[in-house]
Image 1 (cartoon, rainbow, N blue to C red):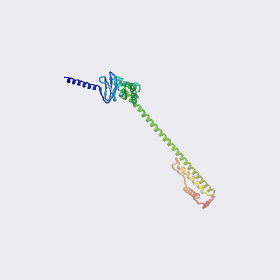
Image 2 (image 1 turned 90 degrees about the vertical axis):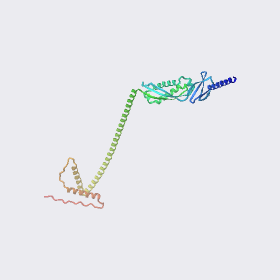
Image 3 (image 1 turned 135 degrees about the horizontal axis):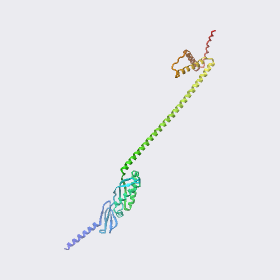
Image 4 (image 1 turned 60 degrees about the horizontal axis):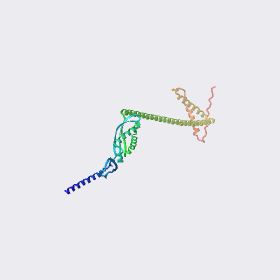
Length: 325
């Protein structure tokens, strides 16, 4: 009987030891931190792995998830600065940095974070116009992140990201915005069309200006050439007149025939070229003109083609015919 009681004592002692070990050794999973309370007061934080606490005196308080977590922000209505009512929702990413603060500084951590985020969404978006909300979503996210992260810092949290998912204006407002966008695009199209027409008119005017400049330069060059031609013609006339004058001075009658034939031919040319003259009927001695032209040819040969050693021929005198008595 004595051995039987001893066996019971040993069994009870073993049970107590196992119970003490089970109560004093705690295993913490990766990504979690446990808080330890002694008589209801926080003492320390257990890290991932095996940890030893005082059995029956210390106990596990809160089991905090230290990994980054996601919190959905439900849709809520927001009134913008220009009194437009929109609906917006979002998403928040946060991480617990201090398990003791997250466990003992705030009650119901996720609910507190959700309400704080929704309140700041209304505050930030309500201070902006509708056009700014639709165009500056990155700025909204940055302002929300800065404000909310500063507010939850005493709770041992770190806000990593806050994203606005959807911004939904009312249907009538969307239709008005569509009409406004269409009007704006029509305005830009009209401006571009007017600018194109203006550029075309400028190019056309520049082309006409350049054409007039070139035409004026052409007329200037033509006038210069005409003046030069008249000058050379006048020099030739002067040279011819000098030669004829010298011939007349020496008694050559062919010089007189040259001038008479020249004026005769010029007069016939003017008569033939008149607009109001279609048919010319007049007596014409062709042999006289041919004789005059022959005299012009001989005179030209003597003036321009004859050598210096050749002597001038003595003009023949025509015997006078006695008048009838």
